[in-house]
Amino acid sequence: MRQLIIIGSGPAGYTAAIYAARANMNPLVIASSVEAGGELMKTTEVENFPGFPEGIQGPELMSKMLAQAEKFGTDVIYDDVVKLELDGEVKRVHLGNGDVVEALAVIFATGSAYRKLGIEDEARLSGLGVSWCATCDGFFFRQKTIAVVGGGDSAMEEATFLTKFADKVYVVHRKDTLRASKTMQDRAFANPKIEFLWNKEVKHIYGDQLVTGVGLVDTQDGSETTIDLSGLFVAIGADPRTHLVHGQLDLNPDGTIAVHGRSSRTNIPGVFAAGDVIDPTYRQAVTAAASGTVAALDAEHYIAALPTDKLALAAV
Ligand SMILES: Cc1cc2nc3c(=O)[nH]c(=O)nc-3n(C[C@H](O)[C@H](O)[C@H](O)COP(=O)(O)OP(=O)(O)OC[C@H]3O[C@@H](n4cnc5c(N)ncnc54)[C@H](O)[C@@H]3O)c2cc1C
Image (tube, rainbow, N blue to C red; front, side, top):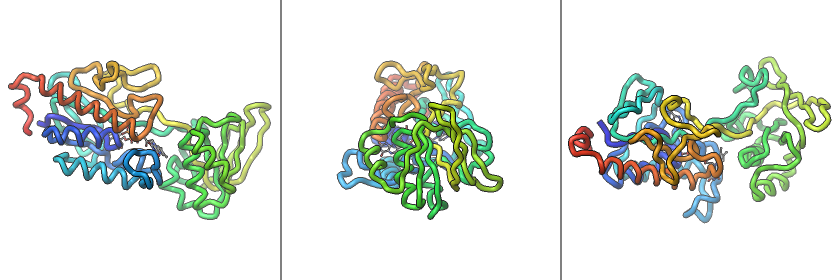
């Protein structure tokens, strides 16, 4: 049995691992089978993570975090957690391969999942022109016309990135102002390949085998238009990945995991939460990393306070 298992391999999970490993806790990170490295694996240049004045590519930043965690004694399993038993002093973590790993403490750092439009044909055409990941799929849209839905940082980043491939990128936004930071807005406004379609919502996605167009409705006057395109990138936000802990951990009304004050402590002793899964507001790599630090320190204090016979259960 472990002292500590960390679920999630984004900035929160890896930073928690760095701190826990340096505290000789020999943590185990469950990194996921297909999304190891978290959200920053889906982006290119990260210019706001301290310590990299020239900027750094998202995947490179995450591989550096992983290397730093492993250097101090973190073990990593590339599998998904499918079930959690968090009650009791020993926490049981069930993996996709059927294994069950146990620990005295768990840090839950599963981040957020992309939000869907919730319209007909979105799921059917997923991977056939509908995408949630510009970095993954942008290459398939060379010299095409595509659209990005959304008005936040993610939408601006995706739209700007996609102009590397596409001839034309529409940004479809249901309001007439953006939520994105000014820097991101300015970058998108200055890009000649990007055209903003204000006050518009996607109501239909057309195409049999592949996406061929979308139907838009004007949110002001209800008028409908159709535009021909080959790709639709959905960038309208994300929801905290909490399904594994429903009924076990307390959640806030916004869906994030509830923690005590500035700590990472959840309602279950020995279970800590960190990163975007507890954060409805800031959702940045550096805030997630800081949150991972808090969780590792909280877990360390929790384990240090356990009776010696309980601590002896965990092989270090
Ligand atoms: C396109 C884009 C660009 C961005 N650019 C920036 C930027 O420039 N600067 C910045 O600071 N922030 C940026 N962000 C935000 C930043 O990526 C997130 O705030 C940050 O990654 C959150 O870290 P996290 O560790 O909480 O979660 P995540 O990075 O989402 O990591 C969560 C991890 O948990 C894993 N996981 C989930 N469920 C399971 C399971 N059942 N079993 C095992 N593992 C699981 C996931 O696979 C993932 O590895 C960007 C985000 C996006 C989408």
